[in-house]
Length: 223
Length: 352
Image 1 (spheres, rainbow over the protein chains, first blue to last red):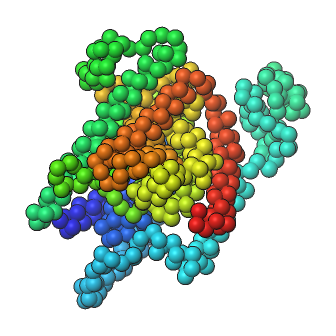
Image 2 (cartoon, rainbow over the protein chains, first blue to last red):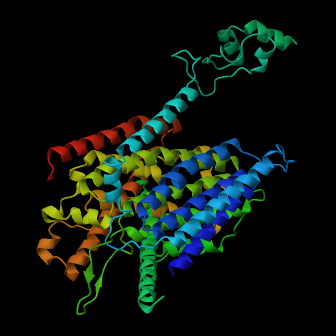
Image 3 (cartoon, rainbow over the protein chains, first blue to last red):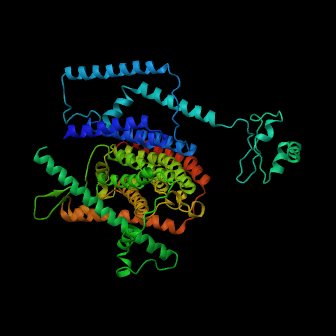
């Protein structure tokens, strides 16, 4: 019974993983990756680690992949065209790395068969929420805190990247306001990104006047 | 596989079937109740023709959904278009197996004791959160695969909204986990059976309950947070292109999700199947006690479902920026505050 389930979930994981690489449509790859995560979670349950399984589904399938799919949907990525392979020198490198990986797996398989098998008895609390929690906050506290600092850095970095620095503090984006096309600036020698300001107007003419480029706009109209 | 395992598996399958059937029946009648109550709020009758007072309306609706033409848009992504409603419904139904619907019920005149939980394990609360978080894919993929701008906008809105409010929802539950010291739903309910069955966690963690209710309404895309299907802006949102049984599956998933979050609210905050003073009257472990407990559990859920319908009849819809501001700038800090308050309470009164 257990072997059957293992074959089912492991097969699903491998099949989905192959699909991630083989699919041309990025969204299909993302869906396949979700499949990989869910079948891995099933394998964790079989290994008597239900907490890790639940966290795997919540964090990877439920949060990270949602963001990935979200971005793919927003960008509306087309299917990859079949390109001629570039960077040909990578091919022998890839073969070498694959050989190393296969050797590792073979080594693990052999060493697992040599080591004595001890099944977890029903009474142990390995993998139970309580034992994980106490281990995380006592013995492994330092790695745990360092990981949280890493995540904090990521958040701060994302905020720094997303912050619009050039805007004055009272600038607002108003629905329905006109936006001047960047092409109007391109040939004028005016800086196109550092100096961009948001203005609150209803018409392009007024926006041009507020931005101080009204003459330029008149000129481009005449042309 | 020996015979004992086979019997266990068969029993579990029967239990799952029974649970799903009961839940689907209740959900079907929630739809009818919603239409009748909305009618009452809006000063009209609502469906009252099929059967006595409209009692057979859900079955008429089902028949209609099955018989209608199933239209698949020409430019849609076929496989994903088909997958989306399946994912939505499956994720909604899968949570049903962990809820404790009642205490163990002994059948009269026999020695059989029936536990009213299909599966009981250590991390059932995390399981619920995980499965419901997968449910968002149903809506996202539906929006993307329909190849329709309204659908895409609806799907994007839904996923943004559900990710944002999942945070506040998860944080509002931490107070309960702190109080109970476990993630097992059955144990959480048993922890609330003191004080003659009225030691409910809502009394220790009221702010968390309010935040949970608001976030849960947003998670299920109901009024006033139903922006993914705002008909004034998006036609019908992510299910614009869906028809017949596929549309019915989305409809079903929404109502099952309503039922699920109501059950979770009852289990975590309102004492689950604990009915005040039922233990003193009937005695623990008797058949009548079990029956009263199950009825009490259902009554609490029905209260929440009524609340949902009531809100739909009375509240206007949020604007999208209001929704995001509210979720991130109001709900999230208050959820953290509620954790802080509850943790302080537990620290000051350890045998609370």
